[in-house]
Length: 241
Image 1 (cartoon, helix red, strand yellow):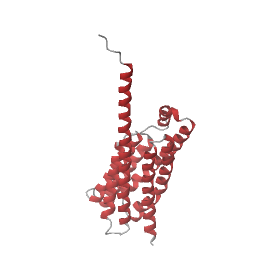
Image 2: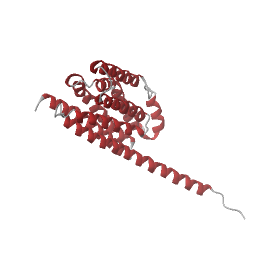
Image 3: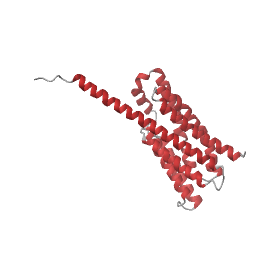
Image 4: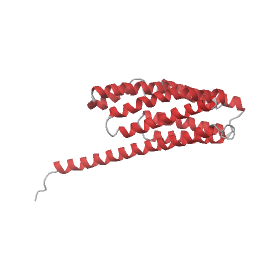
């Protein structure tokens, strides 16, 4: 078993584990917000740990520069996600009844699109520049897939920070383009086959998270409509002749 295989296994495995934790966080949210954060905290933690073997792959083993700089620039956002999840868990533990008020407090920490997001964008642009300099142009399929992954990562992270369900679809785009990139590199190094299948598994988990939240929002909307109809019936004035 080679050193590169071990690094790739750790990189793909930890990121896949993050998707698993995030999926169960969406499932657990049907119970309580506290359960949601209990899954979200280890999800962010393994995400941060898994970043470093990916950086080795992107920068040293294979020059996938756009993704490398994007991942490096995303480190502050990952740390912020972990900090906010811990803060949210503590707040929910103290008083679950004040969910809306606590959510406003959490958003005041840095904002939805703060300095950490700007750093990710700058890092992605730097990666594009280095990629053009390294390959001499920006016209290869691999570079196009990297840009697709960047769009998926940036947009998905922003939308999920806003708690918009569409963020999962952009994460699916990220996993699909990254998986395609791993697939075309299999002839160069068979170890990429493992990362390819891990991206497929991540794609399935992300779509599962999307469907869980979509179903929950649909049920919540239906319940609100039913309660509104009952209130209208309850307070309706009796007809007079």
